[in-house]
Length: 374
Image (cartoon, rainbow, N blue to C red; front, side):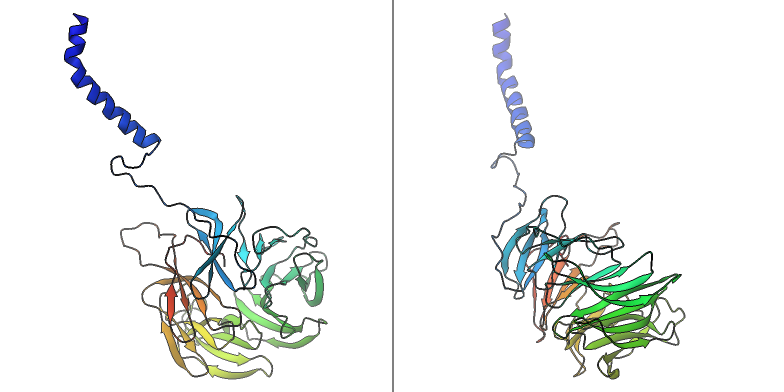
């Protein structure tokens, strides 16, 4: 009786059991060729990056601690594999990296072009700000001694001791004031440091790196400038002047002037409401925001030849989230966020990366990236 009953039930039991196994197997093991499953994307190791080539790095979205390197034509050239918990910020030429640089108490750890730490870090230095030098080898920093209240300019090579270059200022009881670097150029033997009081640039120093001599010291009227930028070679400043008709000094409309540092001469004025965001590596082009109020992440922006007064490239519809420039060249690399649907509560963290050259041509990298290494 039992056997006869099983024989009757077997056709119904076996298909049901098989379906459960297949379904369960698809969830656990994800075999290919079953149902509609497609394997997800995986990180790709593109090999050892070439030495001596200017590279541009982005994080692999499928392995965030891996950095994918592109040359400035947009071609993939290699992968740097950092370990879990490491985040490397690239030097301008992409041939070395620093981790945990910047911020009060930061000292930084240096890595070579394949992501290996340098054998000796040259000692710790508490500093308030840092910037890569134009040679892509030195790190330039401004430190504050909490005992003497001295702001100092320092330089460091990854495997050498920290070198103190000069005392910039002494500020007992300085309050809401800080000093940071706009440029540090070993090619032209100078650094440009700026004091910001509350939120506005107030003083500027031009300092010779080789012996610490202060070559020039300039003061700005309080609340005259919204922001201040410098070319990588220290030859030009972009001064974003707050409009006198602005309702609010913070976030008010600006107009930008280009000033030559050597003789303190204004050599160009950008159109009204154009705010300077950054110079190209050779200083010949400026990335500008064209929004009514200066926004560090604008949707309306363009790249201009400031000497000729001509626009070489305009942004289509995307928001600028960050940028970097080709060392000594005319190209910008722009991290751009695509327009979001009004129904989306949180912006998509992914970015497009577009390279724009001095002739106005551009290349958008083939993939989307969650984070840049600059």
